[in-house]
Image 1 (cartoon, rainbow, N blue to C red):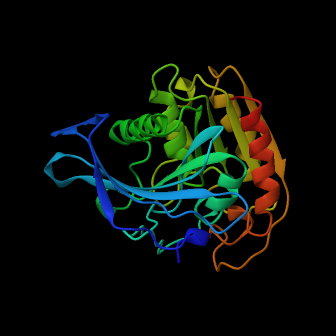
Image 2: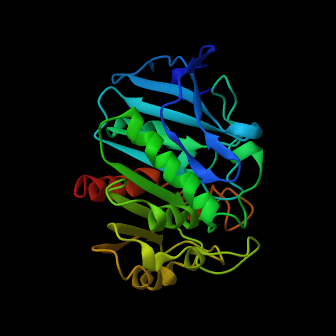
Length: 281
């Protein structure tokens, strides 16, 4: 089931309106959008699926959830492989990630959220710090700007924080208003990259780093938060915010349903981030 909004209607073609990211042989972008169905709640949320299609078969599916008049748009960059298993009818196969499972909560805070699946359903491990992927993140920010007249923020969690820094480091001036990093991968593990691989010194927008003192994930120690902040030396405003708590339901310390994924303290963390966003939009 696709959250409170239910399943989405059939897809409808929307004309191309954005330039494509500068990837080899892929220069034309098209959107395919589903009709959203209002949520059965006090505040109406609009949920849609877009397929961002590039030439030569490259495509990326994204989920867009928004209140009627969003005050900001957040590009959500999940961790792990990046795969969320987003189907054309709006169902999410892998929905445990912090950013995915809380999407409606963000929207009820007044934010539109864009959650991308992986490109051509491939793993993003090892690619999030690359220049080609930075251009994809920038394109997602451009797409966000096309959907609402509101400031755009990048928010990454775990491995997704690498993508958030990479996108922020390569975003043109004025495109994004800030970047948020949560439980950031700061030590080299199986993916072979960390937030330090993604040119943090090139980030020139305000940044928030959230670290959970209870996080036991070996590649994302909360003690590294000050090092990440120091690496973003050209950001005009870097703030570190600590939280503490969470429950364990995943078998691995780096799993989504653990303190690393803010399981059990989602509302507290979202309130912290929302306060920061509202002071920077």
